[in-house]
Length: 276
Image (cartoon, rainbow, N blue to C red; front, side, top):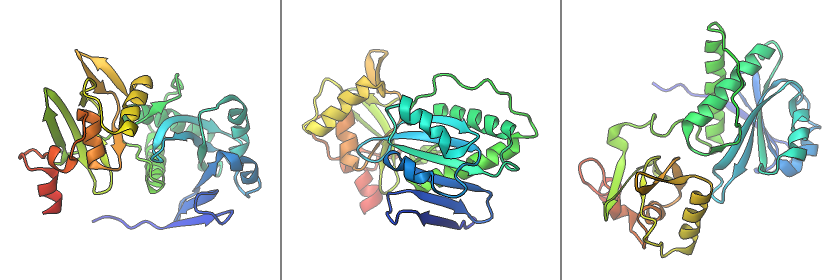
């Protein structure tokens, strides 16, 4: 049986996409969501100078993470001033701060290292951290770090950001596939978003009838989300789409009805599985 969770959210400037602070009931950790243009305003919030870790995020046109950077802070939001001067890619910061009794210096370093490892493992987006912190997590601290990261993962999901490895969280029965002209691709549909999984083949030679999807393909090649391997182009990360047909067209080219193109392990189309 799932456990219910209660979150309290404060919209500090009265806007749903403005500065937010989020706290889970009985937790000592507070999340602060800070759009980059509102960084100066965020500094006025009480308690925002505590220690913790943070994510700098660049979103794509679908409000999904395109690039991410993870760091630690001992003085809360003040740490972002350096990144505001030196890093251009991000448009939003999400900070996870707690009192010093919860986040000791060792805890912060361990949580930062753990979060960076998880971001690389997820293969959902480009990770700007080029070097992982050389920090050994004590076996007695690991349960606390895993518990803190679990809360981070949950809060990020409430903001529309999936942090886990898409393949690791799937059962074989949930995976859909499509094949055409020797191309094989795999994905999963959650009722709202369709995710083309890492390792899916892409028919680059067959151009998409949609100019926007063709541009998305070219951007994916440029940033390394699609790479040439073993004689074929393949996705190196999982790529999310708002439409099952957009996902199918991205993979196969042309103009594809995704409801008929994607099939489950028994050969039933997504149309048969979901709509009938």
